[in-house]
Structures are given as C-alpha cells and as structure tokens.
Length: 328
Length: 180
Image (cartoon, rainbow over the protein chains, first blue to last red):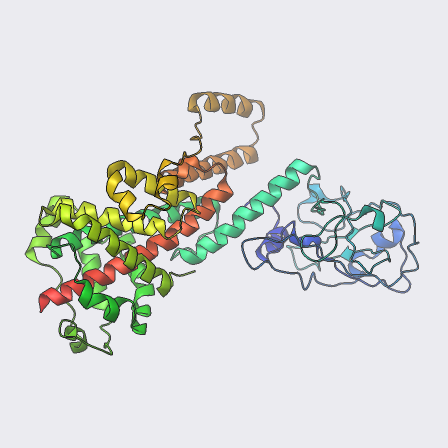
C-alpha cells in the first residue's frame, strides 16, 4: 500500500479505492432548506451538514484506470446564482493532524454532462469517528461563468471539447500539476501492487511497498529456481527429449479437467515450504505426497498408475546424485 | 489471474516444437546438455506466448538467442523471429551511484528533521528493492518507470506459473510412467 504520510482517514480513503482520479465522483448533497452559505454558517455547524458518506464511488475494475468524473446535479439551489460564483474557502474543523487544518483552498472542477445546464456544488463530508477521523468539507463554487464554455473532457461518456483532466486536489495537499501527476502515478503503482498481492501467496499480511517488493522478488526467484530444477529433473528422467508425448499430452495434462484442480495449487505449497527453509528435496517430496492422484477418465496403460492412487516414486538414486552435484 | 488451461496448452505445444527442434542435436548426450535444451526451449515457449507484446518476453528471447541463435529462430517459426531478435532494446538506465549519493548527502545535510530522515530511509529501501526486482525480471533494466516494471512483473509471474505448472505435471507423469 502506498505510504504517503497520510492520516488514518486518508489511508481509509486509499483502502477504499478512491484515487485522485476516482474522487471526481460528484457527491450530491442537497442543501438544507435553511442553509446559510456563509462562512459562519459552515463553521458553526460543520458536523450537521449532510452527514453523509462518500458513497457510491465508482471503483476501477481493470488496470486501465478510467478517469472518472462523477457529476450529479444539484437541484437548482437558490443560493447559487446562475452565473458567477466566488471561490470560497472553508476552514476545516476537525483533523487529527492539526497542522493541516485551516489551510484549505481547493481547485474546483466541474464536469458537465451533455444535458446539464445547472450549476453544481458539491459538499462532501466524512463523519467523525472516535479519534481517527477527518472532517472534510469541500465546497465548490465555479470559477467560470459559463459551464459549457469550459468543458473538459471525460474519458468515456461525455462529449469533449478540450482534453484536460480535471482533478480535485485532496485536502491539505499541493495542487500544482506536478504533484498531482505524481500522485496519479503513485496510485497507479499501488493499484498494481494490489494485483500483485493477489498473485503472490502470503502477501496479504504485508503492507508497505518495501516488504511486498521483497516478497515479490523472492517469489520470482523461487519460481525461476523451480524451472531450473524441473528441467534438470526432466533431463535426468528422460534420456530422450520426446517427453513421451504421445502418452501424456492428449490424455493427461491438457484435456482432463481435473488437472486444473491440482495445478493451480501446485506452485503454492512448494513456495511456502521453501520459504520455511526446507531443502528442495523435501519440498518436492512433500509436494508429491500432497498431490492428489486423480482418476483419469480415459486411462491408457502407461497412465493406469494414476488410477491406483499411488504416489509416484520420488527419487531415483540418479537424481539424488545429481542433486548433490548441484549442491542444492 | 491464475494461469488458464489454454495458456498451458499453448505453452506445452510450443515447448514440444522446441524440443523436437533440439532433439537431433542433443539426443543421448549428457544431462547438462539436455537440461539446457529443455530449459531453453521452455523459456522461449513461455516468452513467445506473449508474442512480443511485453518487454520481458522480448528481453528473454534476446537472451536465449544469444545462447543459441539458430535454434531459437527455428522455434519462433521465422515470422516474428527476425523482428524480435534483432530488435534493439531501449537504452539501459544507468545511474552513476557515486554522484547520486553525493548529491543526496548534500540535500540531507540541509534539512535533517527526524521524519524526513525516516521517509528518506524508507525511500531508499524501496529503491533498493525495485533495483533488485529489475535484476530478477528479464529486461528489467530497460524499463524506464516503475509502473511499467510492476506491470511486467505481473505478467512475468503469471507466465512463470504456467511454465512451472506444465513442467511439473510433465515430470510427474514421466516419473509415474517410469515407475511402472
């Protein structure tokens, strides 16, 4: 996971897959009827403003990280005129890291849908929890007068005129283009690291880039070593390079649906056992013990041993000699 | 994403073609030669699954071609072989470590707060690990940015898993056959 010195709640945000790009999801809050848009009104009752969650954000499924601009329209709020708006600053109220308070100045971006002519405003807020919470208030007003004249493009659905990627800066963070780009890059990296976490066994408990990278390196190295070892074993077992193709292919490895069952799990036990410090020989004998000997639907002569449910003989003396030579 | 059975099939077929190409030259020689042939053909098969779309596959093919050019070309059935083998890889990204270290020391000297030092150490750790990852993944030195590196690692891991699974099942079947 990304460690960028964020507070707890921001980590929470990260965990819930909200990225800079994704947080363009508009959060619609209808104003209270008696809503006082002045600063004083905000300051006085910050926690009472629309205690809503940031809900319904869109998650990115694949690796292509679509740029998402969520927009929802506000009911034509009477407080906001149709034309000009002023930027407003709002003081934050509660934050665990106090030095970031009261410094909020946001860029405001509005994305439009084709049908929209209304102005929008967004107020998002996170409810305070016990000690680890942040209250965010983002209140936007438009800079430009006309929505349509400053359309920025969304990636997927809307019609675009220009090609800007509008991004809302996070609370208390810099808003220049460099840091935003860098933040986007960091989020890409962390997203891919999440995929890696799924791939590499035993990575769920590890947080932090360095530890995970370590695990990944170890895993890749162990896989490469396994390839070496298996090719050596195959060379030893098989004096000719034909691999008993006729026997094996169509019946065993490829077509039989049961091979999908043991195979996905094959890589993992060995890796974990290797990690536990077992020597290679024990690892593989252990694996071979665990390997369920499945029944083959169409068994030929050579393959009938599978039907007996016996584990294959582990080691010829030949192979063992080879192993001592390898120094494994 | 786990290795799918179709991937395994493809890998197996390509591996066999490779082995058949190797066979006349290597039959009945010593174990080391056979092992090398097996591994080589397996690697090329794994890399050619990606058809040159990923950086690591191209780097791997080039590496194996350095060892045994002719056979690799045959394995790749000539179509992509020329482009893949002769393709120039992008420049290696080289850091002059001394210079970088010196400038970092100077920077650190200026601002030495505790939190910054911790952050700097963490960054150093991460950087060292990414360098380690680059050394492990084939063609890692040629990947310019981290995002690409991690993406390639993902793909490489899946392909390696395919390779290991197929090889292991073949070995098991072969051993079982021998035992009888």
